[in-house]
Amino acid sequence: MTASKTKTGLLALCMASLFLTGCSTLDSADGTYVGTIYSAGIVPVFTTFYPQALDDQKQMFGAFMYRENDYWVTGSLSRCQSLPERQVICQWHDKYGAGIMDVRFDEKYESFDGSWGTYCGTRPDLIWNGKKAQGTPADGQ
Image (cartoon, rainbow, N blue to C red; front, side):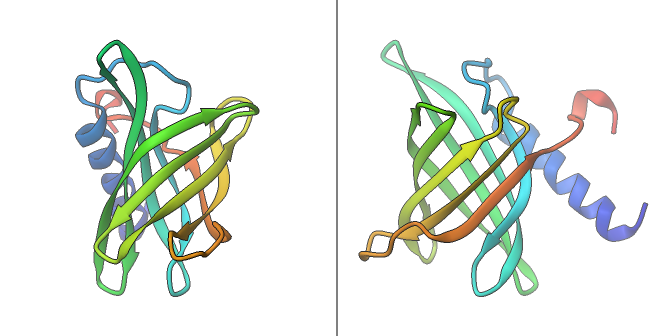
């Protein structure tokens, strides 16, 4: 395994551990996905979806981090809505701004394809995709 793949694998495991510790599984989209996002070019992104029960309501939240030059930009996903046909729409927020993420999962929730945009009148048409990360800290990988 190359150093780059090792770092990528460790980052995915850290994201999964950080955001999924203590959470119960409420939806099939739960977990960390490794993919790409368009942000001044196609860059790697880790996207994590996790449930949180608030006042007896199941709500999906999440977090993401993507590569920018020599560092990682982190952000949050909130107010996620599960729609028919495995579509999920969330609000995203990072140090550059906020907007909408609109993705559709495959039948087994192993991957998603979608897009994002800002609130400034931009349609969500910039690439955001991911594939379920393999392994968790409990797997010993």
